[in-house]
Amino acid sequence: GIMEKSSLEQLEKNIFLSGSLGLTEFFEPYLDIWVRGENIYFEAIQEELIGTVDIDVSIKGKDDVTVYGTIPIIDVELFKEFTSTNLSSSFSKENRVSYNYKINFPITGKFTLLNNQIDASLVGDVSIIKNNNSTADFSGEVIFKKGKLYYSGDIFTIMEGHLMFDKI
Image (tube, rainbow, N blue to C red; front, side):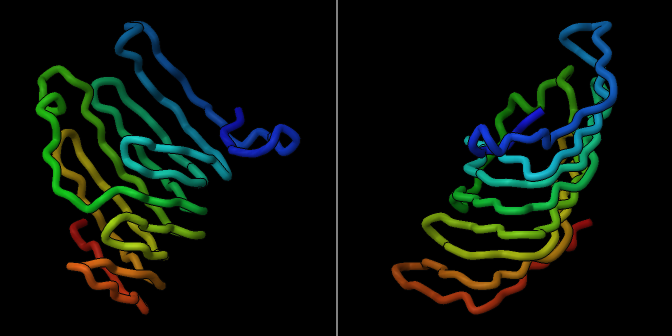
């Protein structure tokens, strides 16, 4: 398949899926899929995230789906504002599929965080682990290489900064 934002002349196959999809129960399929791709362009509108990544992920399960793998970041921009939100109660309903994540996100290229509070370029490596309906745990280190921080009407220049996640 093709998942890349480019002109028609440049289109090459850059995403590959293998595995199986059990449809014994059509609306509750069993997944055993491996997804591998290079230079995958995506837009996650709700998360205000856009960019290009590589992907090497497996998706397995039915009622308890596990997503495991690595998604190296090539060029991604995150526009989401820093706010606290509550998860909708619909995520805690019984008889819903639960998702488990164990994904590593090495920043191999450019990651830009851009919103009303910050405009910064980052490098580093972050992993996320989430089991069932629990909150996500993060590990890794992100280094702010340059940027601006906007706080209380002032503008601060980011020369370099470190953010460490050590929950896992």
